[in-house]
Image (tube, rainbow, N blue to C red):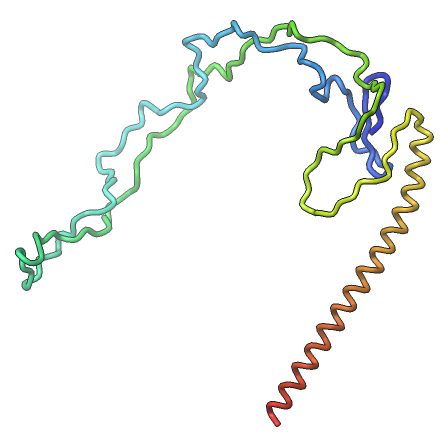
Length: 215
């Protein structure tokens, strides 16, 4: 993270720039210059629904919305006893004429005026600050992030007002990082090979056990 006296900032990862912009414009470090006018109210006749039901669209006379109907062909069984079995009711079946729920067609609303937003006014609490970049004293360094891997270590932290010193620190870190990556790969490859050998040995033992059972 590089902060400059003109209140711009730059972020680099492994020496590669990923962000460059204004502290004042890109970050909420200052109160906004403008705010919505609390006294500006939406007119009572303001229409902000872009779509409306088509008043000319009517449900067809033959439209069937009943999903189930009584089976007209069903008859009470001859052995049905109302006293013991209760009053017989014909079963219901899927309605072959069912067309689904009818919904009115939607059309563009001719009275639509667009999205209403209160007008902006100058924020009385806005105070400019040309020293956003400047920190006279560093008591601590914090990392605000979210991750799913544990056992993370943060090291190689430097605070300086000398870009050349920071660049030299980065180059030194890169060299160390390459060595660490190579060492980690070597260890990972070794563990993978050991796991592979252990799995192969287990398979051989299982095969020997199977042969003994056959004998």
